[in-house]
Amino acid sequence: MNRWLTWAWVAFLLTLPLWMEDQYFLHILITSGIFTIAAMSLNLLLGYTGQLSLGHVAFFGIGAYTSALVSLGFDLELTDTYTFVFAPRPVWVAFVAGIVVAGMSGWLIGKISFKVRGAYFVIVTISFAEVVRLVALNWVDLTEGPMALNNIPPFTLAVPGVWELAFFHKLPNYYLVLAVAIVSYVTVRRLVHSRIGRAMIALRENEPLAASAGVDVTRYLVLAAIVSAAMAGAAGGLYTHYIRIVDPDVFLFIYTVTMVIMVITGGKGTLAGPIVGGLIFGILPEVLREFASPEVQWIIYGVFMIMIVFFLPNGIVPALSAWWNDRFGATPSAGGPGTGLPDLEAATRTAGEAT
Amino acid sequence: MLEIDGLHCRYGKVSAVRDLTLEVKKGELVTLIGANGAGKTTTLKAISGLLAPAAGRIVFDGEDITGAAPRTILARGIAHCPEGRHIFPDMTVQENLDMGCYLRKEPGGIARDLERLFERFPVLAERRRQMAGTLSGGEQQMLAISRALMSRPKLILFDEPSLGLAPNLIETIFEIVSEIRAQGVTVLMVEQNAYAALELCDRCYLLESGEVTLSGSGEELLNDPHVKAAYLGG
Image (tube, rainbow over all chains, first blue to last red; front, side):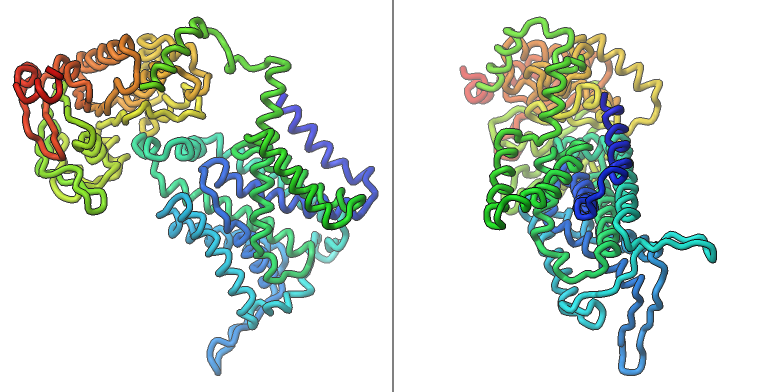
């Protein structure tokens, strides 16, 4: 059932632009898609290793800025006599550079911040994002600061000398985002179903026990941080070449919060969770705009979010799959054979908890 | 097989274990008894590498393992079955057991061991696709023990395996512990249930505020007036 659902989704999204004429809606889908990719990357850390990084937008922004700068080129006056000049590179090279630099910063931050856990980890990640934002704001020579980097070239597909398509329109960008989203989904899926993924989940479940079972804790956490950061960097690259302007506001805390909302409401630690959460909370504000005044929009958004967290604490996807299993009783795992002596079991359990 | 010499462990400024010296010979079942806070759990954590000792030496099979990483120590053959039925609750029984042999690389041997475990604990076989968190207390403890066994240890450390279990289950767990020993695995067990521990063991160490105050065979300690008064309630 799961596999068919996945393919049905892909087919639906692939054919969507064929009958969906509304360009504005396509724009919403593209931005929601970009945020969904970022949410997927956050889910790898938050959902699978259980580490709450509230500085995730830093990787998104680093990807965006790196990709923008590499495609635009820049020069830096290093000393009075020497200026470092970086010539513009093709957009695809820039995009990959953005992914690599974001992944490297994931490695660095992972190395530093995984020395602490819980609230301390959260604070380290928030500070990191804030530091990066201040750098982007104040290093005017490189980033233009609040004046923003403008005229960022869009992606282009070309057969040299024969044919060229610059992604000025929504349609190619839509398919590009969809392709990157699928690649990200497959990456996360393969990773969490591997031996490494099992170690990550074990870390989430019980870190000391995982360590005593032979899992190299820091190594796997850092690996998760690298992959996650690189994916967020890819989302940032897509964003920058689609919107074609990037300013220090990409590092705002609210974007991290949006990603966290998407992951938590969709269902952290599930593959489909961030996609469901990403689409709902990407599209919802736009739908609300049609018939509610701005103040009311955010109230509805907030109430909706609280209701999901209140009624579906594990998120939408786990709730739906539990409902599906209840209704159509597919999995043998839930009850299964061998639940022979429920009374005795319950008795031992309470006895166990009492002492 | 395991020699601990002058072990000191600290949590910040508080010493939990002071100058502890003990030895476990191959094939023995040795227990550590003592009150809450005597340093029993800390000692086990230091052996399995979850806690770096402040001073002292831990030698296993002639090799110094003091302060080594948990996975290194596990690979040398020491498995730790921690206090309080430690399992991975949101993973299936099967996945929990897979985590137990995370460092092992011979699929054939793993499959054979798994089969043997399932024969011994049929209830785990029945529930292998169930989330471990949904098992009863006794089943969770069996799973925790099985997980530790899946690494094929030479020495297994049990931390209060009877904690929080119903009396009939406690007996089952102790039977399992002696079975494990009978199969040639050396056992070092921490136990609050002093009477059961002393009956079961070859030798025993009594820990009091981080120091070994008494050691000897189970029988000797059972008849010791201090142990009788303080730990056996009579």
